[in-house]
Every structure is written in C-alpha cells, then in structure tokens.
Length: 93
Image 1 (cartoon, one colour):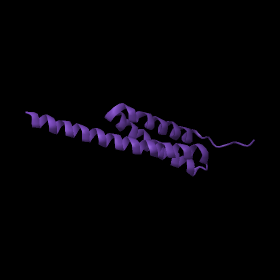
Image 2 (cartoon, one colour):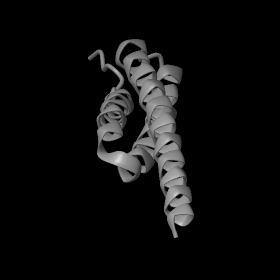
Image 3 (cartoon, helix red, strand yellow):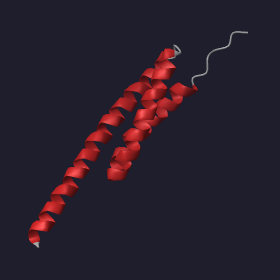
Image 4 (cartoon, one colour):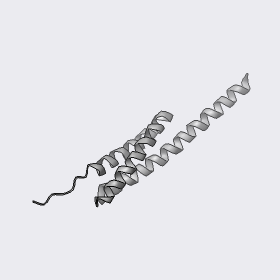
C-alpha cells in the first residue's frame, strides 16, 4: 500500500492563519489572540512544508503571515488610540 503523509499540520496552520485574520476585527484583545494564532500557524506551516506538503502548507504560511502582520498593526493602533485618549482625558482635568 502507498501511504500518503498526513497533512494535519498544514491544515492546522491554514485554519490558524484564517482565524488570525478574522480576529483583527475584535479589537485589542482579538489582536493579541490573533498574534498568538498567527505565530503558531507560521510554525505549523513551516513544519508541514519541511515534510514536503507544499500546497496547503504554503497557503497556511501566507495566511498566517498576513494575519500576524494585520494583528500587530491593529494592536499598535489600539494602543496609540488609548494613549491618545488618556492624554486628552488628562488635559481636560
């Protein structure tokens, strides 16, 4: 019998990449969880690509990188917004 290698890591990397993209729409806490999901997705996709599972693993790698970058930008934007609001609030007193 000809057994094909399991692509569980590749699928998990793809799912985590998609989840990290979706979590950007949930504010600062979503961005934090999105960063975590994106980094884990990148790691799993790299491991799957090393096992010669290129199709889904490459898609998971790309989605995870996009999700990680978007979540990092979203988190920084939320932090800047909160800092600006705190500054305005302090100047009103």
